[in-house]
Length: 293
Ligand SMILES: Nc1ncnc2c1ncn2[C@@H]1O[C@H](COP(=O)(O)OP(=O)(O)O)[C@@H](O)[C@H]1O
Ligand SMILES: [Mg+2]
Image 1 (cartoon, helix red, strand yellow):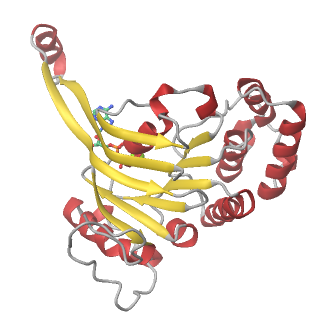
Image 2 (tube, helix red, strand yellow):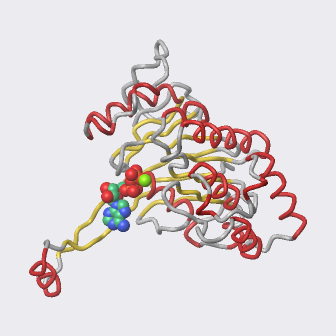
Image 3 (tube, rainbow, N blue to C red):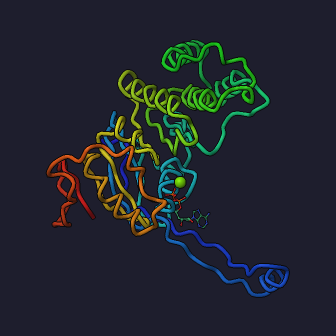
């Protein structure tokens, strides 16, 4: 059984339009215009246990929405998602114990407390026996190299140190599947690299399955042999990382120049891989050059 199985997954947000100003507010009390946004539009893919997969696409492509559905934070509008055999939106404790979500732009930790306090809260939340808590903590401290930071108030840590503590806290229950949404955003190059090295060891040494979104091509290039590209809610590519780049550049071109990946971070083109193949019938499992849909 694959760790993550997604079939025809869709999410349509409904929201209300309000014209600007007081007049708009008053009008919206009587007459509300309901709008719909199809953020994820019939997405299908699978991730095997122990894989590290990059989930790429321009802003607004539907990446965060997909990750939220896989963690059970959002109900799908249609289609199915299975993670480790569980249906995420049921949010069963048995499921939550086996996954973790880390978002670079949202903090789990409280800034006024040292990370250790939140770790103890998580120990209780996940009902971790003391021996497991100690073992996991020692393991993560070693992997992250952060022992001396545990009792420092979070607000006094650098951004890079804070992200390490976020990862440490999110992983204390030793999840089998880790979802990462822009984990290196805003970090300097050195911190980005240390987070990457940690994720690589986490995957290699503990076998953690990782699905990761990032705007930094270096993250994906170092971590993810495979990339899935999403654009306007649809999967455009699924295959070897090198092949994902041209799909991504095409999507970025359509979305505007500032969405383009930084060319300084692009790898050397691999001969025969730059061109993304035309859609050609059903996707074949195990096709290394990737599948455009
Ligand atoms: N709560 C919401 N209500 C309405 N539209 C939303 C909501 N959240 C996201 N969207 C829209 O859905 C689309 C996908 O968003 P998102 O999944 O956050 O994209 P990404 O993470 O790839 O940047 C975007 O067009 C975004 O504006
Ligand atoms: Mg996002």
